[in-house]
Length: 104
Image 1: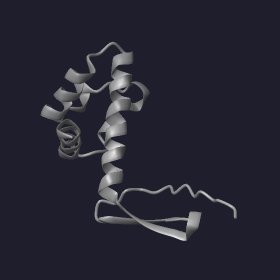
Image 2 (image 1 turned 180 degrees about the horizontal axis):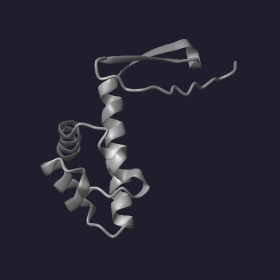
Image 3 (image 1 turned 30 degrees about the horizontal axis):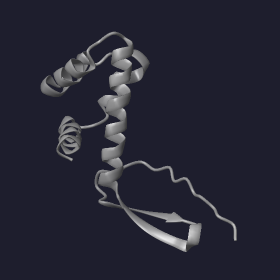
């Protein structure tokens, strides 16, 4: 029996609560919450942005906190599209992910 893996590329839609994925391995159907995907994407983005800021010599924590508190994207460098990466997400959602990570 052949094993197939399907890579699913998708956009997170904020008006949907469930993403149904499929896997050809063992004919399984799985249901995923878009909230989980969104949280993982936000977490990955925050880490990428922090690395970019540190690469430029900034204190990543201070810069990200400044952005989250004020809403001013000027706190985030445009180097390597860091600013464009972070402004895609609502600041409240970013804070929710950070708090969730903290209290785990």
